[in-house]
Length: 152
Image (tube, rainbow, N blue to C red; front, side, top):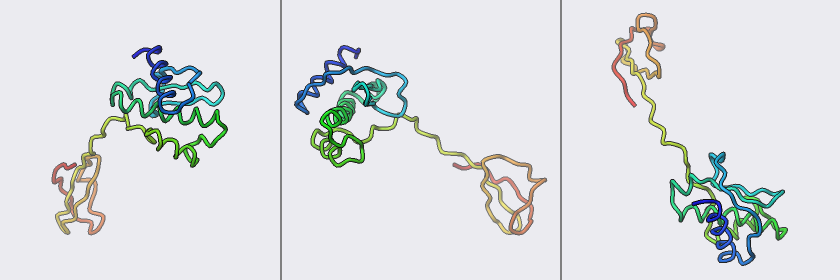
């Protein structure tokens, strides 16, 4: 999708779901990382994250467009346009926009831990870093530690 197609999609969505037309500029902003879009109060322009469209598809992207158009139309009407305002929440629910965009962050791998066991009291000790068992002892009974293995 290019800038012209985006502009046309935003204008059509505005007329179809909100009534009043969108008279400003909609663009893709490659610098957006954690948000799906942004409404500029001073210029009334909208920025969108292209990765939302590429990752989650057109249906989720249109919900992001509706979210930003809620900010746009409510601000121009002089009503509560912020996320906390009742006007915003009501209009967003009416047009079936998304409140929060799905996360683009990669799924984190679970951390691995080294497991040490005390030979005296059988206490298990979990550490992210491996250490020399000749230099350290059990914190409970001061017994000798042995490396049991690794776990997630």
